Image 1 (cartoon, each protein chain N blue to C red):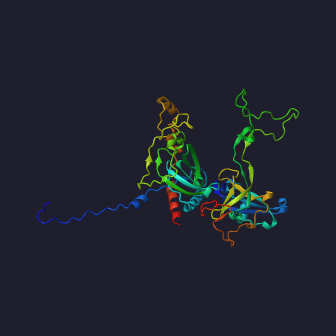
Image 2 (image 1 turned 30 degrees about the vertical axis):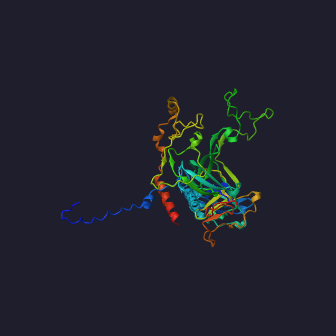
Image 3 (image 1 turned 90 degrees about the vertical axis):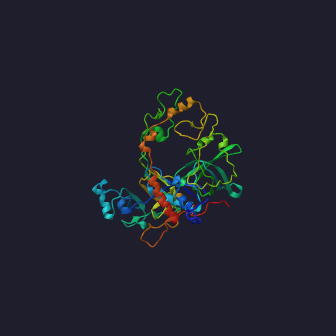
Length: 246
Length: 242
């Protein structure tokens, strides 16, 4: 470059590096476990408050990580009949049920060609550790159809290494479409009441159309069924952060 | 209702009962009541004064207490008499004690014989004409009458029933909540009477109960939560089998 004076150009300092503090950005994503949200009903909120205090006490002792239906977990429980007195089971979470202290999750795996499903209680004192080997979401919230899918979709290596998260803001959604065994299935998964998006239906067109006969299109417009949990979640989040500071 | 775990890792179901504004209303002596023991009238939850007639307000005015929704009697020995107007708290009971719980069962309305009494009914097919849930025969030929108390359709539920011998697992003194083993008659948030168990197996189970009752302004300072010995407290580490 030739400047107007003939002297070398004025020293331009390099642009200041913009420090994006990833830690503060990551804190914005809050996960409230679904069993904290009380169901709709006529019970006194005091009961849920007391249950939440017990749940927080237990979480202080045992770390219950964030996980969703579709993530692969490894759970070690105390077992009086096993050598070493402890039992480790690896599986994909197919369902999370229950509210409060009775919250459960079902893990599924195929071990030596035998499908095994175990329903664990999150707050049971026999659970010694819960690790998330792979944190991801699937297209549905209930993966019970894996029972009628080909066994390759439910097999997970028992000695799998934990896959570290990508440190992104959002949890990866696995858009896998699962192939099924031939009919009959345990439930008619093609019917609209199950609203399943994660199956690759290889049924003929007329059967898919016949299944739409059982659709109830008025349900999504029914206002009495709406349960807005945003304000309840805010209150519970404040309560939890206060308790955690104590 | 809530789950609870023991120290050996077993799960039990537990019902939460809240003691809400209970006061002793009146003392009725043995001669006055005509029974074997003296009685104490106890009132439960505070209610609106407009739902009861003026004549019912006298008891509450005497004791100096707001009108209550429910009034029950407890048979009491002479050394356990309490002055009317004293409040009663959940700390009156201790964990490890056994308790009887009385309440009105959920009303089911007019019900048929299969639901009300558990009759088997008749088969669904194989030639049954219009007879699937009927009682069938109601008496024999020789009796020539129907006995009193024959089980027939009628109004079911909404009557007082008691669950006996329920163990108290935990007491929360701050919110006055009693955790009682198993289920209890009545719907959620219904009024319930809790009494020391009268079963002969649990006659000597209570070691040092607060006698005659737990007084809040006394010297005793109780912790917020009282647990039974066998219960797993969430502050302990996870259960392991050695």
